[in-house]
Image (cartoon, rainbow, N blue to C red; front, side, top):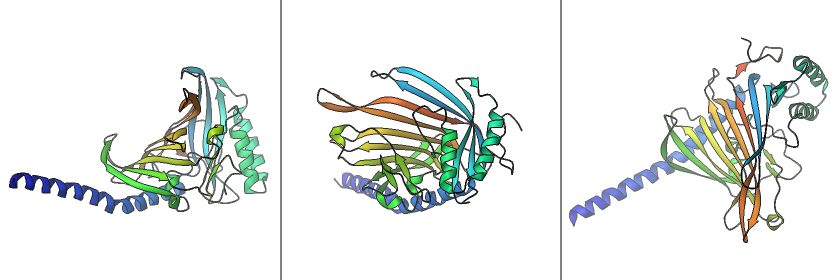
Length: 313
């Protein structure tokens, strides 16, 4: 009996030690990772890469129905109106393998017009119109600008956080940080008028079945955080409508790669938009559209922010 008691006590001590360590580390992980996301935002400016954007649509059985690809010179453009604000700018080079005529000349003309914009809002409108010209009815932007946006000071109070035991991820020891939105936020807009572009925020335009129009729509997800550098290697984010079991309206996955600028930069970002279907009285999320953004290595642009061909040195 003494031996069993000793084992049990030892086991309990180990369990308490593990949970105690997680509890003590949570605030540290939040603060150090948040600092790294701030470093990311400061460094992720005037960088250029080749972006391949792939659109896939699926039928009701989840089978691929159609695929389109758009290749662009992707630029993180620091606004001339406010040096704290950056935009995603895309100069489309080809659509489904077919080159866009005079793409470089179009870029020069666009920058000339952009410099004439008198306000931050008009700059953003011009950039969004040009960057999404070949995106059909979908408008997806800003995903690269705020790494770990949930950890921003204005958003963090609307979430609960918890740590899982450390894991091995891509050969690195990582903290796995879970988050769950607990209440609505003025910095998260759902089918609304948008958010203040001067603060980190999220804006979603999604279809919601009539049965769920009055239900809460909340975010949840997890970060995979390098245990040595506290940089984010991966994020999984889900926008859910609350019911007996939360239904996923949109899932976004962010994967990051090393760079020459002491930060990890986007490697691939994918979004899966779901339809909520009812079958035999039960609701489920069915994949409708997937959009995947793939990036080459990022590099600094020239000082005049000239769009360069990605094959140039």
